[in-house]
Length: 459
Image 1 (cartoon, helix red, strand yellow):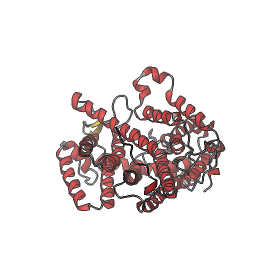
Image 2 (cartoon, rainbow, N blue to C red):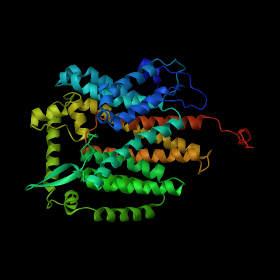
Image 3 (cartoon, rainbow, N blue to C red):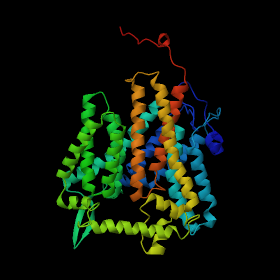
Image 4 (cartoon, rainbow, N blue to C red):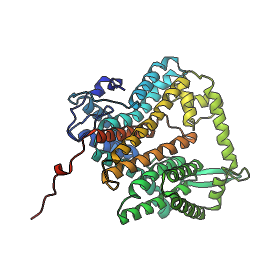
């Protein structure tokens, strides 16, 4: 693929310095300011800092940071055009062009212009910023720590409030006047129980692979403690889709592992412990996935009915859809349900139509294409680096965590919206970065042992 698929300004960059990767629209921006601002943007977004500190919220920091980072990228001194074999950027550019060009033909173009485009742009910038700015291994490490560290903090905060003050944050109607209290995000983190379950599931693969795989016993012990806390919080959310997502993660980890028997045993013990801490009402809710005789079975049937409603709405305007960001409006007007679609794939058909959905699914598929190239690069790199080489281990573990995360997200999206949410675009950007950095490692000439610098001796 040619780098010309990017808008011309985004192809301007400074010449890559030694040791920097080449590839998918990735500039070697020497000043660290744009990258640091991007990390600040992630902190602001994931931890919802503007709602926690009113003074910061008044200046609209997210908008300011996006504008400032974009300006710094666009004004970077142009350099040589690197080869760009990834299709993710090209497909996303095509999707954006389709969304803009289809506005006059959708059911509610005014809603797209007024609301849909704004929310979508705030999401897709995470792809472009990740691809543009995460261009070295140290930056990749920092990026992973910041993103998934924030996710862990978002779970520990409401869990701490629950243990110390009895905080729950939400509830579910069980019928007959009974309610089930469910753990939601912290008061300043606007996320419902299913959303909190998703946050937990995004952190679990990286805790398992990156921290749990550490050589240091204290670090591994810390990872076990964090995993226990996260899994307990997942139980408290009462999220059935979250529990299904956890099963997907466990199955993916077991499938990829060389020690399947040991991990199966650990999974079985963990399952027994999780069931042991559930209240009878929580057990009833999770059993409603497979048992129609439970008290919570009615809500499961309601979710299936909603899905059929969404299928019916999607067939009303199948070609170009109702317009980006209009699934809630479409469902409200056509079936009387004032909620956005809770299925990513039906959401895409409702809003983008079949044409846009095909483009979007190709974008999701490109993530697997990137990870497939990563596996090939890792195989080539394996002949040059020792099995315990720190760089090789990080790439292998980060790739494994990303692959498990993508598989989980594909399944979780059956019960969750996400077309205009940032996480798919951030994950896609991460897959591009992994592919690009590993390609650079493979293409760089190996360093001879005689050329390696000896460590300095201290007096």
